[in-house]
Image 1 (cartoon, one colour):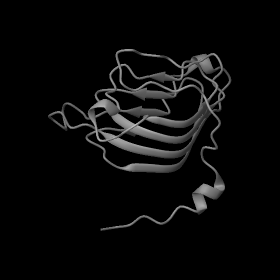
Image 2 (spheres, rainbow, N blue to C red):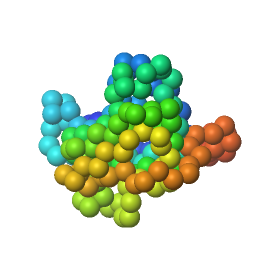
Image 3 (cartoon, one colour):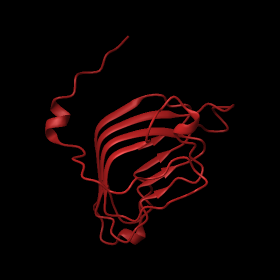
Image 4 (tube, rainbow, N blue to C red):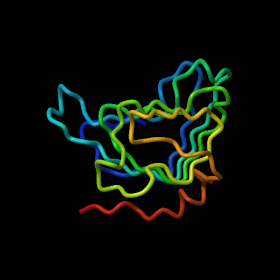
Amino acid sequence: MDWEEGFQGSLSNVFIAQGDGTDHAFELASGSRIFWPGNQTARGVVTNVTVGFAGHTPGFTDAPLKLKEGTDAYFENKEILGYIGQACNDTFSAIGSSSTAYTGNVFNTMEYDCTRIIDNTSYITLPPSASATGFSIASFWNTPPPRYE
């Protein structure tokens, strides 16, 4: 999943299988300096997500979460599984909830088996792992259809 250029939407009921040697499962940025000039911040809401490592060696792929270039996000009910011994996140240039309308924690109800990286230069820090259900068939079929305005 890759967003940039001032993304302001939401994603719900997402399943991602990440294989050996692949890029980040979530690579989130505020914008392309070429196509989206200025300081537009990407602020996405991501709920009911399961990211699973489907390769053979977790150390031969990128961290599942890469939040960069001023992005901000809110994550709820997210599982990241199959990454034992791999870093979970790279949030070095993420800006986090201290500078946006989001209140409270940026990551809520997250379960993971990878290693959480605590980056004191970012406002976005993974919480300790806790039980989450992530994506499920039931959550997929019970989601209301999109509204078009």
